[in-house]
Image 1 (cartoon, rainbow, N blue to C red):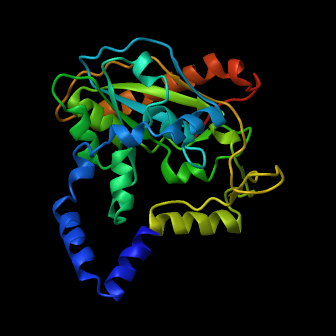
Image 2 (cartoon, helix red, strand yellow):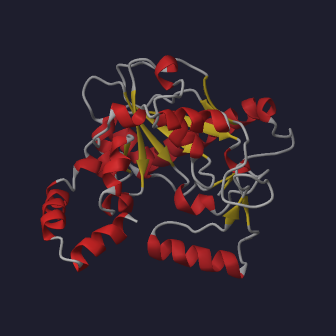
Length: 302
């Protein structure tokens, strides 16, 4: 809609509206990579309270964090819309401030969204920033500590495996966040959001199927995935795009201390990445029974 409005303004030659804004857009293009521009007023909108209470969304802490340090939270799984990440780390109605006093969270999303005129302003106002290397580095290198980069590590590709009852993560090839953590000495924290994959049903798309092949190709071309999902309607429960009312429990795991290495080797990156996956698996195994996952269900890391 924001792109369509901008195009219509150009077509109908409302130059006094689009020229000043496009000029502003050019000079403001780096802001999403420099901590964004959040608005307490928008983060406090009452709609976010109803959003949190609808599912409801819960945030669980397993260990205190040191506010004099910076951290990278690896959020899993992506699900269809990463609802737990947004509800817990972007609005002011979660328990984040009570559980982690002295911290500011930055939820990183695809850079392409910040090229959508007008919509980008709204995204930054709610606390979203780019997931580029420059953006993450900016947050975790801030002096004084107390900053948390929240990255949905599985990204768009993982959303194609977001099926109810499944816990499949795309993580084995995701190592960029590990290199950034080593470069800046930011501790890594695995985060698992139980219930994230239960909010929508997705058309069956096993690897090798024609549907998955098309989805993978589109994802590579456009940079984001197109899962074919559905759930309930507003006034009926049979079909619609409104998510099911399923509880989400986002559990923040134990921090992994990281010693700063300005130029980490491949071996050092691989070692820390392996440690992260082990801690993530432990977090899942320790808490899955509390949140309705059968004992025989295991975490699949791809």
